[in-house]
Length: 421
Image 1 (cartoon, one colour):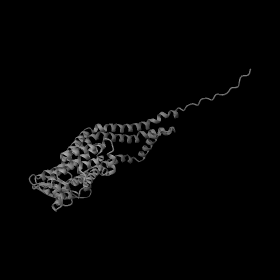
Image 2 (cartoon, rainbow, N blue to C red):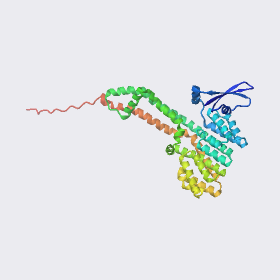
Image 3 (cartoon, one colour):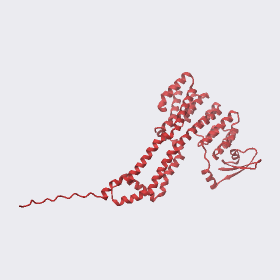
Image 4 (cartoon, rainbow, N blue to C red):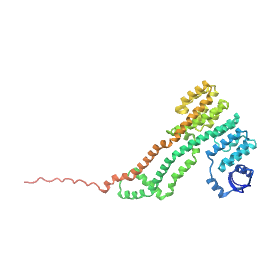
């Protein structure tokens, strides 16, 4: 449930209100970040107020994840206790959900739970890849380094995502306007044309018939015009769960340009995680298993699991990479060659970091030019829609001349009798 914490400063007398998503008043005070010179008053939010707050308040974001793990890394590096480190992060987050989660994590650790087990209770905020890295940090005793690595990786991902979103604003606006214009024409222009063509008793093209049928449905059931926009909203809201399905991941990676971005982003996270685990002296088989869990795409998850099986059977890492290089796409063999160099020079960590850094640079360059990449796709989609509308509306006009001006039949010649002399 939601808790409203009113914090009143004893010096200035000013009151600040904080919303925390938790179940007890004690956790609400922790999540609100109460200072020693503040007086707190906790009250519950129920009924309609809770419904409004949950649907209008700020949701957990990637920015907050970056802030939390960055702050945890700094605190743990300075030997501050995990409980105190978590409590110090409550002031850096803005969503009620994150405040409640930090308070719950602090409580769970105070009763003897591990940080990874406590985070596992919130899979919507801490995905499998983050949990896998936290478990690796706990096993290797390098939790601060792991938190720092998570923060850096998520920060780079956030920067790329912001560039991608900025580049997609124009195509999205254009496509939404195209759909809106099509719906508006279905309410205004098409009904008039339908009456005109209906009185002609002319045979109409399929595109015109389909457009008239679509317009007739919208005129009699106008609420159906909201369906495309509702579907788009649901798609964006539930994209994480949709993309988690293996079938969707296999389909997405085959899309030109999009598949390349997916491969490079998955490779960046995976190879960076593997480098960090090997640097922490985690067993190779365990490191490969954790890396598989942290992979965001099923192809890379399958790749690292198969490599782990080969290593367990006694095969070395470069040969295992080469045998399963087809999972890595066009760059598979070059990555295997790099691993061969790493095996000979004993610099696996540095080479894996280099691979991840190269992919990050390429993703950054792609994100900067995403608008140029999407522009041809937008033009093609617009051209198809405009062409369909033009053909559906104006195509029958070229055949109406046969109805308006029917061709006159040629007179049949009449045989004449020969003149008699």
